[in-house]
Length: 264
Ligand code: DGL
Image (cartoon, rainbow, N blue to C red; front, side, top):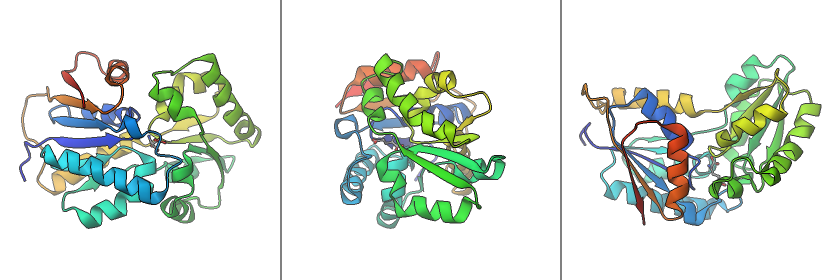
């Protein structure tokens, strides 16, 4: 294993690019391979077994491209499959989970909202996180049914999407939450809509930055951090769905960043 090898990142679609953005910001010198499994999105309503199978496929694909570490940039995949992946493969995996701990620690109203997929909210790992970190705070879970489908089509702000989002937010606002945890990597694309509907005192929180920091720590620990002064690492994007949507996501996140888009 060499530090020059790329970092693999995958998601059920374009959602993981919200994590990739944080990774690149923190480690601009690293090369990244991003794999969007858009043909199989959404993962949220699928069974644990089906999610594990898709993750194995994605991991094998990234390993064939020589990745030194893989970021599972999907809450649904992490909460259902990361233990399996870590047991099966001998490279480091970094996962992403809803940011319950920081939200619960900071909440003044003692009520927080979590917007995530069915697969994440019903997973044993998510329940363990609640037991370990909810700290007496009341957690209001909402399944973001239908949101990923809109975002995967490149729809980040249609009236139809706004209506769905408002339906999910209204009961949470009534519960007097002061933190809204985005437990799906697709949902940061909704931040402009969220900010129009949420009162100013409700803080929206996601885990992208924490995942980037954790990735850097693990690379350092394992001696896999690429040591170079060149801050222009490459991003190679692969999609088995619509590559143009991935390009749209890239252009939202990055300005002047080298990239290569490949349809598979
Ligand atoms: N972006 C994913 C997540 O973080 C998956 C969404 C889906 O495919 O349902 O959960």
